[in-house]
Image 1 (cartoon, one colour):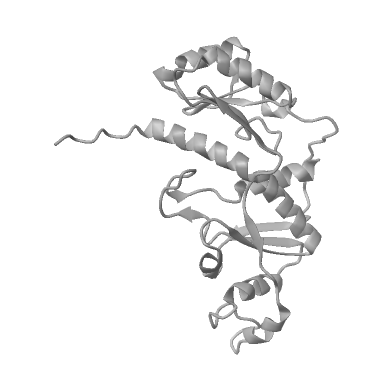
Image 2 (tube, rainbow, N blue to C red; image 1 turned 120 degrees about the vertical axis):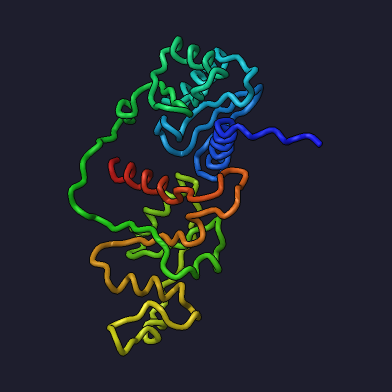
Amino acid sequence: MSTPLAADPALLGHLNLIELSRESTRWGKGGALEESDGILLFATGSWLPVVCNGAFRSDETASPDDVVTRADAFFGARQRGYTVMVRDTPADQDLRRACQAGGLEVFGEPAPEMICTAPVTAQVPDGVEIRTVTTVEGVHHFATLTGAVSRALGHLVTGAFGTPQPWYDSVMAAGDLAGERYWQIPLVDDYVPEMDSWYGDLQNSGSAEGSLVKSGLFLREFRTKPWVHLDIGGTGYFRKPLPFAARGSNGVSHATLVELALAGAR
C-alpha cells in the first residue's frame, strides 16, 4: 500500500491564487482573460496593477522571457501597469530574473512575491485626482445580523440594503467592477409595526417570518447618513474548499470597498 504524497502548501496556494484570478476576471465587468502555452494574463475592470491586472506562469516549463514579453504587449495595449506573481521558491528564480531584467520592480515580500511594472502611486489615469476624504459622505458597513441571509441566498450571493437608492447604486457599481455578487433586499415599511417592543423602541429579533427584511429596517431607523449594509452571513466564510477559494474566511466585500474608494477619488 503506497502512502499519498503530502501536498505542497506553497504550490496549492499558488494554484488557488491563479484560479481566483481567473474567476474574479470572469465574474467582473470589463475584464479580459488570455491563457495559452502555460501563461495566464488577466485584466479586471479596475486599472490597479496590483492583484487586479497581472500575469502568472501556470506551467513551469513556460519561458520566463515569454511571460514578460506577452505581459508587456497585453497590458501595453490597455495602457495599464501589471503584476507578475513570482513565488519565492527555486522554481521561479528564472522568472524573477527575467522580470528584473525587463525593468519590473519588486513590490511585495514574501511569497507569493509580486513584481510590479511600477509603484501603485504612479498608476493614476489622466484626469484623476487622488484626495483625502475627511468628511463622512456615506456609510458602508458589512457584517451579519440574523443569519437569515444565508438561508435565503446561500454562500455565493451577499444580501444588501441601503438608502437612498443613488448611494446604494454607486456601491453596487463598485461591486460589479470587483466581480462580487449582491442582491438588494427590499425595505418593506409594512413590517415595521411587527417590530414593536415593550422593552424598547424597536426590536431586531422576533418571528422568523420576514426577519431578513426586518434586520434592514432596524438598521435604517438608526442611520444619520446615506448607508449601505452588506450582509455577509452566508458569504464571508466558506465551509469547504471551492475551485476559486480555500476553506475559511475569504475577505468578501473588501474588493468592493477598494473600487468604491477609487470611484470617490475620481
